[in-house]
Length: 341
Image (cartoon, rainbow, N blue to C red):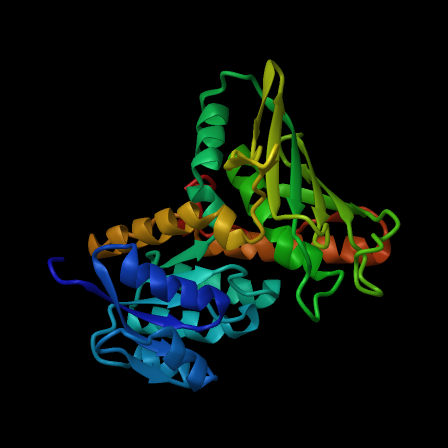
């Protein structure tokens, strides 16, 4: 494909606006041709300075806009199912931010609809698969040089939670990244989840169960634990350590700039996921654009999006019940036979 890939972006909030900037300034081979957001003023602001972009309140109008070859969905999760199905009907390749669809029933509808097409159109935005450190850890585990993985120890910390953030969202919003990363790193499905709750931090809003310790079991006999702490107050930190039979490997050690001045030194700590994973987002969108222009679809699939929703729902039930909860996945369509792709 010699011409630029025309992309419609659905959602012009924090994430959507960043993707619009990325498509315009960072990633070659594509251009934004349409944007949809219920807040037309926000959409206009996100495309200020871009030529030839139409702005819409209705996502379906953006999909039908002239020059749309592909779609990037960055609207809130509950709004994803309808445009995903519309993209399938139109044969449009789509990059959809996580969660693909928050509820597992809707997520399964999406995966089954794509499976009926007999070909993939959707890539789901689990961007950690494109992070350089996660990529090196994946390669190391795949070679088997450290022996069989036994455990993954994960940390997920945010400076503060946004207004309206609930105890369940620590799992179905924050830990959803670790759910996908664990499945991908290990090449195993998560089969059960337990959630332990220490006394809430004094920095957490009233009623928010923060932090939490989430423990997953896998069908390969490994254990995955995730400390999720969304009001730690000091920075955004994501770490992962794989403990294997013959060694261990750890990523996410905050290798950032060290500033020395006025008789002291300080190390910068990222305050936002768009800072920590800026390169991963760039790699993700660049890979999507390149593959789409070649008529291919790569990266996390709609099945990965479905599996993440199922595991997250089991995690929320475990949080509410205080007990171990099993994960029940539907039969996997042949289209998604390879867990690791």
